[in-house]
Image 1 (cartoon, rainbow, N blue to C red):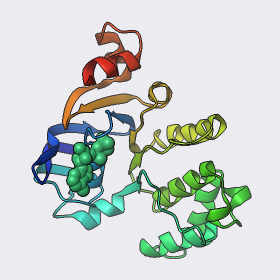
Image 2 (cartoon, helix red, strand yellow; image 1 turned 30 degrees about the vertical axis):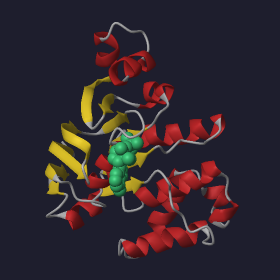
Image 3 (cartoon, helix red, strand yellow; image 1 turned 90 degrees about the vertical axis):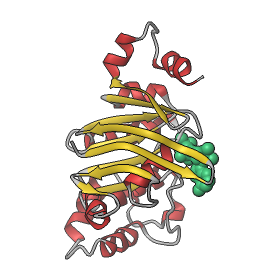
Image 4 (spheres, protein in one colour; image 1 turned 180 degrees about the vertical axis):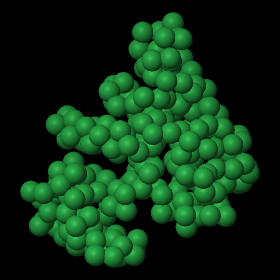
Length: 234
Ligand code: ADP
């Protein structure tokens, strides 16, 4: 399994944001669902070595997020919810900048490959600030996959996109999920039904469902994922 999480807990002050969760994930797209404040982003930040957990363990491709964080960073790509981008940089320039952070040697070929893969070709000579939100998300994804990580963590990558942009990004995520382990947080249940193989629902820091999409829909006496989500988190 590419991701192993065991009894993971994160306490902020006197608040338990993540409360002893355990799960594993392998290649494919895992939908990571839960109401606002459930602990999704906190879990994602621990997996990507941005913050340390309070207790428990997490590993990515066999590397511990605390003691082997450099190895974890090499194997993981992260698109944070806010997707911070340098708006004054040109698309290609921003990719070269990220390649530099990863100390990639002669990255031009890989940059061209990723620009092609993420459909950024027609926009590659523009400044990021001149791009639509959909294309900015493509830049975020392109930056996240540039070093060809085995694991991708995507925090609400489709929020605020129009229906046409949604289709493009979802297709991209589906394609990436054929070879990579992807954790996708989203509030759009229809998106989960289209893109995800597996689903974890987290509520108040605890996992309340961990199943395949088919299994979850079959097990619960509700016809929609939305109904299951509401009954488990309300
Ligand atoms: P989600 O991503 O599911 O919306 P978060 O992981 O962002 O949830 O937050 C989980 C809980 O932890 C929330 O109650 C939130 O207010 C709290 N929290 C998140 N980050 C911090 C922080 N840096 N300091 C204090 N509390 C935080």
